[in-house]
Image (cartoon, rainbow, N blue to C red; front, side, top):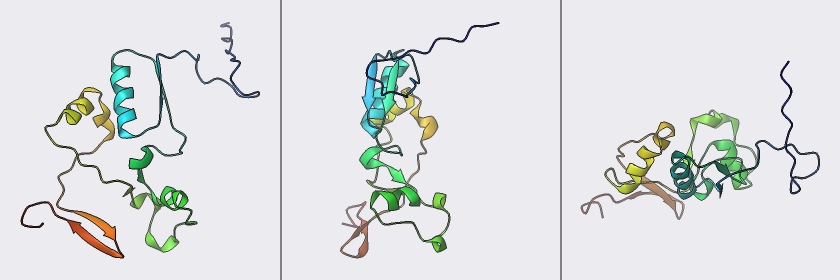
Length: 144
């Protein structure tokens, strides 16, 4: 019969809490913004043991895409209305994200295999909400 592996304990771990891993890492990354995710991915593909964590209950830090529940929670707006659709029908970007198709960031995302969790699309337009109006962001000199 296999013996149960003894669980490690640490002085810094609050009483009653159980360690989720052995507590030995090459790097600890705080936050799940784009920069932190790229750094974590680059370190892990180099064979480093990385602990990657965030204080929020969603990924992406200030550049997250939030579903309705998380969006309303972030801005202390109560619960989303029932009549606008399913929670997962919406993803609202806190900050629009544009990546140059042939840039170094795209190469890093491909190298770290983060692209398994991303979807790339060509966009037809970008809009912002300002002063009570929805405005199109100019994409060409003619639109400016």
